[in-house]
Length: 389
Image (cartoon, rainbow, N blue to C red):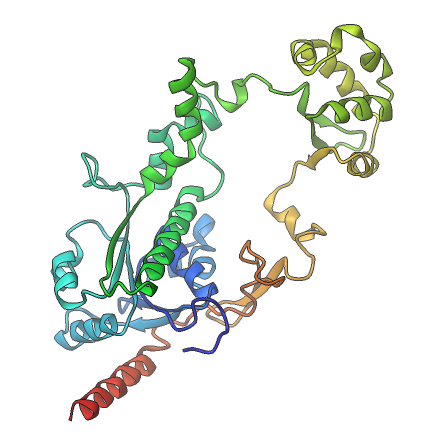
């Protein structure tokens, strides 16, 4: 499948992954133009039938792929897998170490039969004492300290999305792009790449680790943190909504006080600089709270926007489906589930030459491309035989 005009046009990826991290990697590559062939067992990827919070997993992270069903209990399907890998540039997997050896797809066998292949394993941990452990997004958030920083040590709180899994897929895509670039430079060898969910989360909390390393002070969690700005808070409005306002520059401080009738704060000689104001938050914030409570959120937002002051309503995910910026042309793209039902999803967060990526992607029906891919491989085999003759 070529001719997309996208940067990875002509790159073939074979994917044997499930849940979120591995499929995210394949989904990103597919949106960038790669042909991604998802190999599934006869019963299909188990995330196809998830409900509740998992309802979106399969359609969201498997858009734009082809589906091939192989049963590795049969020698001919195992051999077809190797023929598929022979035709591929990249192989994605996220099984526990040793599990694919039983199918003849272990690291040594892959290096022997397919030395050209870029093999990417999305795992719980990178090599080391924990490499044998299984991991989940929530597990590594607890281990890395992210949950304690989002909530507190006494009440740790995971981030409200599969953030680490998704970011792990992104790091997988970055590593693959680097390996493809290396091949472009004339290196014919493949690459063995491992992505660790735990180390991915560690990367997220590195700023706090380095803060402790440099200062010797234990970083405070988000609910307990010291404020770096005089106004950086959530306020109630007159119509029962809530809004976050961040006043973070000298110019913003003066314009905010002037616009919202807080001249007494602007004129106070004890509030002459940012440090003074941070130390005086105990009397500044109650006064600002009183003023903001008298404004309706729409009028308040318009004034803050005109002053170029950062602000945001406190949204929920469903609110974003009515947000004017999200609804701008290209902000949401329409994709289609395996049953043909349309759904909207944010475009890949990249503008490519002024355009958005991801419109019209389809979620594959289980095994929909098995026979077509089998025929393509057979045709290629015959062509190779003819050329050899």
